[in-house]
Length: 188
Image (cartoon, rainbow, N blue to C red; front, side, top):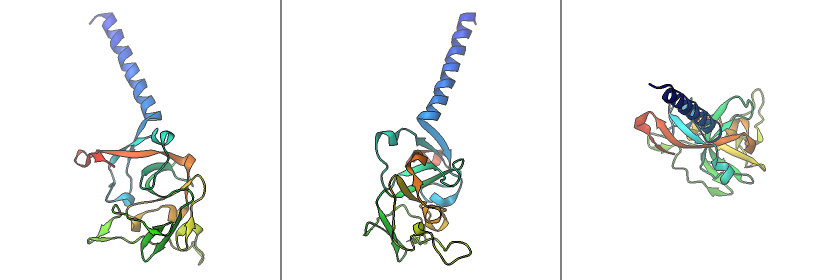
């Protein structure tokens, strides 16, 4: 191979690597599902692509699946479904979730033996009989620039009912495609 061709190939490879890194940093990021909190929508080990640009172009919507920095440790990433938007009032009644007084249709919630799992309030604060205001033991109103998120597997999800809302600044992006394993390839 001539020296000019080798140099050209080297430049192409460097440019491709730089573009891939910039794309991952600013446009699309891969994310691995670590827990069963989003079953049946996502399973442990699934790989999803996260659109990092979408929320610069439009507002979050109820039902979006988002990756975010955990509010109590921003080095940890979570993936959950947006349930409550700023200003929404959420409450549970008989294992069902209500938003602004209306029953929320949630076909994505995990089912056990053909019955949708209940959406219950989280337990009391350890060592007390008190509950956090966001536990959904009582109606809770989501604050400005905050989002209430939950896993689809409601009985096995560490989510806003336990640790509170997610600030808008912690949202990384929206999951939009499951790409691995190939048998689960599809949009979210």
